[in-house]
Amino acid sequence: MNSNTKKQPALGRGLGALLSNADTDITSFSGANLGTIALLPISAIEANPFNPRSNFDHDALEELAISIATHGIIQPLTVRKLGRENYQLISGERRFRAAQLAGLTEVPAYIRVANDQAMLEMALVENIQREDLNAIEVGLSYQRLIEECNLTQEQLGQKISKSRSDVTNHLRLLKLPAEIQAGVRDNQISMGHARALVAAGDAAAQLALFQEIIQGQLSVRAIEQKLKEGKTGVSSTPTTSTKTNTPLNAIQMVFKGELETKLSAVIEIQKRNDGKGKLIIPFKSDGDFNRIIALLNGE
Image (cartoon, rainbow, N blue to C red; front, top):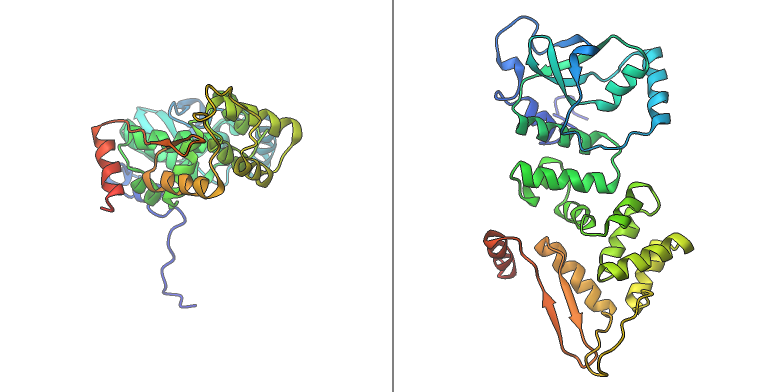
């Protein structure tokens, strides 16, 4: 291999690009030793209020604390300076908490300056790229980057080096009932199960199938097959023999999934056994409506 060939950075256009920006990088300011790793008093660092991770496994933290006590912190924290000898975490909260458990009084850190939005973006991108977030936490991180940093799904995918479909699939999980989201968070079901449940219909059908997964430990493939056959465990009482909603067939389910991916929206198809039905495409604003129309027109 040619030694002069430049290797793409692991973070792509994400955190690396942010930290090399003159507006957010403290190395753009004059001063001694700026841009180097500094040992900071752990008591001078406060936690990051924007960190998307809400759960930390205590046993895993204790294991990391033992490793840090033995080998030190291999990967420095990243902090921003709030004032004289006062800092706030941008990324590395697991290491920060483990260092506290290990009884460290100082920790190595890169010092940056950033406004809150830039800090939020740094923290979210860092955690998406490097932390073992569950699928719901990833979805929440995607949602916050889109909503609070004014990114489109396309821009977000480019920033974190993920496909648009990956972004869409994680965002869809946030549409599921809270009980199912908690099941993903607590590793009761996989992301594959959750993705299948998105297509199961309304909340009642999703929850019924969720309970069936928990009790029967069904595979993702088994769930997908049940959905294709219309066996979701939930039946509705028909009002007339000709107007009862019927399950979508396999071709229609595939079409629904492809259309949702194309439009980045969770659509609803209501099909009656007399052949009639509705295709419902929700939108959040006039701008979102115009976006959907443009996609449908192939623009």
